Length: 89
Image 1 (tube, one colour):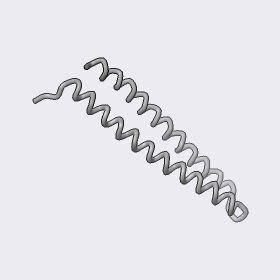
Image 2 (image 1 turned 90 degrees about the vertical axis):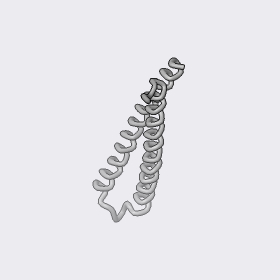
Image 3 (image 1 turned 30 degrees about the horizontal axis):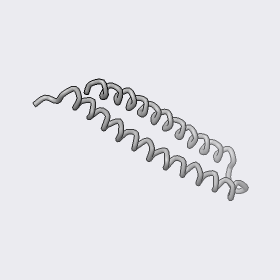
Image 4 (image 1 turned 120 degrees about the horizontal axis):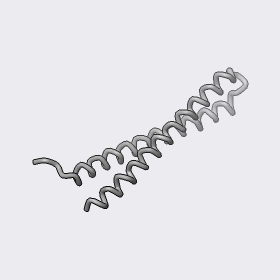
């Protein structure tokens, strides 16, 4: 039996939901790491190499921005797909 167009759309949508959940989980972890890093900096800045600390913090921030962009793209695709799904019923 072949799948219908509606089943294909539903499968694509389910995959996007999974991707969205994964990016949200990654963002939660990234935000925890950023908060932990800021706490370490506040407590130990005097004994840390500041240029290295700043570079690491900027890398975490860049990762957070990249994950937010990816999450936005998935949510946009999900919205477009939801529209297509509503049109095909």
